[in-house]
Length: 271
Length: 262
Image 1 (cartoon, rainbow over the protein chains, first blue to last red):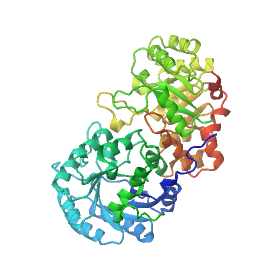
Image 2: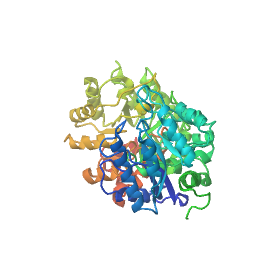
Image 3: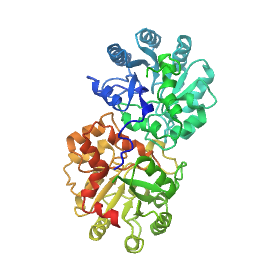
Image 4: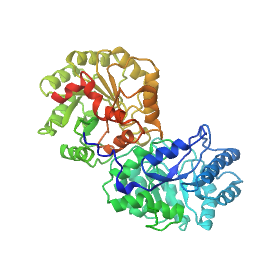
């Protein structure tokens, strides 16, 4: 029996997974790191959306508690973990939370999830977040989806990401999940060089990585898994299986995200 | 011998499939070390006449039957499904039959499905049940299908104890619930193509329920076949468990092991 993937390809290690959530039940996360290591993922960028059930519009306390957990994980694992500070931009305290978070060791960017509209459905609350990110020179990972039947109340779509990219051309934005309907999502952001995409949040659709590379150029494609919710192995398989060069796989698995989240230049990947 | 229990040939109406024909599928299989695959025609989900789809399937795999095992489509909500089964098994020499309850619009606890299981049990033919093809969140607005309720799956299994059933696309959370339900699973196997939820999902499932009922399935060419392969290979399972899922379990099964010789 030929076991084509029993051994990992040589190019896979080290890899940087820039879209990871600690398990919402809390507790030790050694298993999470061990599962990542099994498939060559050496570095994780974590954002916590809260313990227990994730809330669409979390309270200030919920957000602060979630962030504290990430700060703690990152502080305990400075060699392998970085973090994003998570906010519900509808809170008056958002600026303070961001400044406090970005002052923490190893906190390298900002996370927005599905609380991105105000009670009138306007996107305005995210503007100050993008401005702050632009001023501080940190990337913003934004959940984006185009959901059949309509998005959730505060959930942004690829069109919204394009709007933000035009408005804040010096802010690095990562559109999560290839925008949901991945064929259209990446085409929507194609004109905006300050927008990247990660490849997680869906099943491993054959051709999705090749499509992203073709539309955006390999330098704008990042590896993320969306673990804890997904298996690292099934998500990194998207890159392993993609019909792109090994050099391009290295860029997706390490170089692009390292440049954005670790401030490292290509080639300085600790191998 | 690694067998993929969930594969398709053909086009998909709402997005482009990069590999659509026998040659493409064989390329993917060679890339991954997959020896054989149980293939159905994608358009079987949409055609009025399942026999037409099955005939086309058999034409498309001419010369490759050693590696592409034809799993015909049957729609028990259509009036002459028994004829489709008979012709499919006797003339087309199909290896098995697959139902798509969501795309064909019936419940698994429909009496017609029970009739079908009885016919297939008598013929020694496995029933493949496609539970999950396209993610609900991404389905095209003109082709929206719901998820199959776990209760329907339990009812189907409970009412067909003599039928060999391959569940395609059962999510790991549903699989755990199915095992917890207590329904007898003696003749049931589950493929792993949708078992990528949770960073430790498969490991946890195997720890609790063992590997005996798991087989490899990829849902290629919708999905990269490497994905399910890596989920199994790198779940932190003992080597013998990995080999059981990929290559041994199906061969230990009295009906599934016969697929190789149909």
